Length: 188
Image (cartoon, rainbow, N blue to C red; front, top):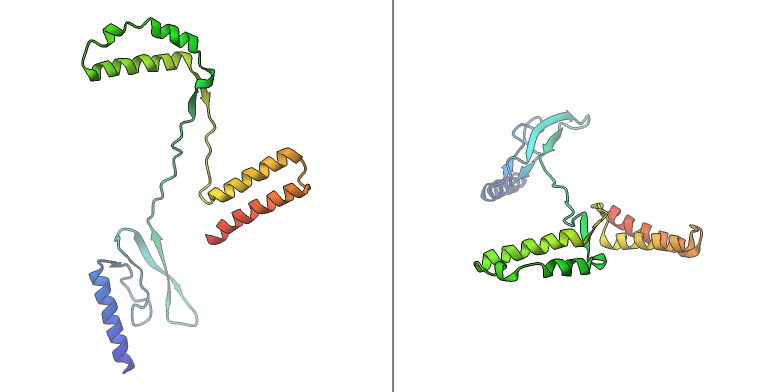
């Protein structure tokens, strides 16, 4: 009776594997008589180099090793490293440059041509009269959550204020930051 139940379960498993279009990557015996270990995936190219690494002393089972072919793209900071500081813009110089423009000549073509001419003029004024500020690129660590980052920044602000790591406020801020960082680390 027990063998019949196992055969039904095995048939059900094989049927599910075939219907879901998954690939079984272990194609050799993992014990002396059968294949008991499964490495299945939907992508047939994600698993490679399935091999026997050895066997356990107390069992006929074999230890398997394989490579996962996963490419993780690095997060790219979409913020530019330079930005324009319009607060320090030379407004008088920009106005003088705009007064020199012959607007009748600019509005002589099609709408798209006129728009391109206007954009070129405005970008030229921006390039000449607006200061460029180089920003710092912040590479946020993947494991650092938003909440943990805020606690770390708060810890730094408190330390700058008191300039003593033994101060109770510094100790509290440091403990909160450590707790938040450890929460994320324990999830991984």
